Each structure stands twice: as C-alpha cells, then as structure tokens.
Length: 338
Image 1 (cartoon, rainbow, N blue to C red):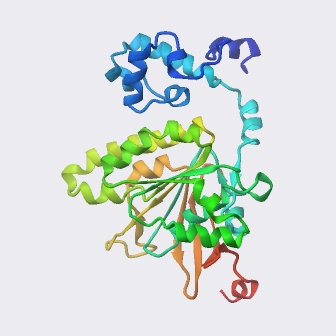
Image 2: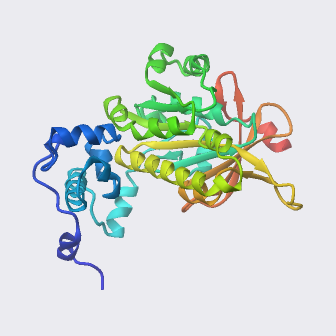
Image 3: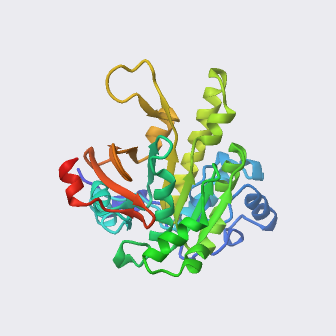
C-alpha cells in the first residue's frame, strides 16, 4: 500500500518554525561548541545538516546531542522523506550547466547536473583541465544561456589552473575577463591532507560567494603519489571515499555541480578492449554519478567523450574540439569523414 500524506508526515523530519542563520542559533550549540565545530570545518547550517553524529564527537558533543543538533539543522534546510512522485517533480527543477558543446550536452542529458558528481578521466592532454576552465566561465552565464549565474571553487592539485586561459574563453563569449576571474576562487592543494582540509573547510566560502560549481582537478593526483604500495591501498581508499562523500554533501547542500578530473593507468594484462582505466578503483566509480572518458581523436584538436556510466543515461559518445576560444562544436564535414 502506498504511504498516505499523514504517514509521510509522521516519518519525516519535522521542520522547525524558526529558521537558523548560524551555528549558535541552534539549541544546545553555544559559543564554545560553535568554535570547535568551525575548527572542524562545520561553518554553516548546511554542512552540519549533512554530517554524521560520529563526525561531531571531537567537538565534545554526546551522540544524543549530536543527533538532535543534526536533526534541527536538517529541518532548517527541509530534508525529509519524499514520495517518488514528489521527487520526480523536484528532479525537474535540478539545474544544468552547459559544457560549451551542444553534442556533449546532449550526451549528458542537457548538461552537467547540480547535486551530483561528474567525473572526467583520460590520459594527459585529453582536455580535462581545459574543460574545467570552460565550466568556470560557463557557470557565470545567465540561466537562459546554460549557465547558473554563479561562481566557482577550483581546487587545483597539479598546478594546471591558468587565469590567462579564462581570459581567452571569456573574451570569446563577450564577457568581462576581470569579472570572470573575480568569480573563480582558486585553492592550491599541496598534499592529499591539504586537499582534504580545503574541501572540509569550504562550506563558508561556498555560501558567502554564491558558488554553484566545485571543481577538484585532479582528484587522485596526490593520493596516487603519496600512498605507494599495496600495504597503503586500504588507507588510501578510505580517505578517498570520505573525501568524495564530503564533496557530494556540499553539492547537495548548496545545489552545486561537482566536477572531478581523474588520472588513468594502463593495464598491460588487458589484451582486448581499452587497457586504460581510471585511478581510484571501486570507491571513485561508485561515488561518481556520471563518468566520462576523454581521449584524443586521430587528428586535430578534436576530442572524443564517451559516457561510461550514469544513473539513468545510456552509454554513448560525442565529439567536440578544443581551440583558443575554448570548447567548441566540430564541423559537420569532420563528422561525416570520421
């Protein structure tokens, strides 16, 4: 039997009549506890709403009190049980961000979804960072043009971010390059610990700067170089898993699109099919909602994007090109001769 409205209401988290603006507004969270929570990376109600009771233990909060605080925070952003028909209506309001290529957008069902993680992986020079730069510009476009009219948080782990590239792409779209650059907040991550720290303390920056796009380029670079050998594999995967779950929590709390790039490795024991595989194993595969494999075409600036996995989209391929202007469509004559 389907749930009635009364049954749903009885099982859902009750929404408080009062809206809380900061951590200290929450009953049971005083100045000292608020300070400890902020030191742990919980600066906003949104980040606290997606926390677990265990994560709040270092702040000296009992499990019962932690559950109460989290419940109030979740009620503040109206998280509750939802029927599938209502969820379908909500899904129709999810925002999408254009990649700059109509064919690539079509492959993704209309563009990158907010509240999900999109992973781009491929070999060196396949266009991962170029695509990230383009998204930094596109997210600032009006909604009518495929943007989100918002800013970007860019966590750079390989020193590949270049403001000069933003300027080229912005000028091509007749945008003010200086304003575009102001709306991209870049954080250089020097180690995997630093990378994790930056994301765990990003909620305040995201809220204050109206950020709707979170990029980690690349996700696995530091983890790959620091955790060497099979004896460190389990610890590496655990930290990656926690890191990615923090990312998806932020994306959901702030209705942002999350994008990660990933390195690849070759498997010499594979004799049939593509021997190139993304780093991170099952942890990254399960946590990324949409995975796209990028590779160079046989000639010119053309790239091939293959949708490897998605919760609801079919596998497929599309082509686009990378020029001085950014991400662009491929001419029809190339498509016919491909």
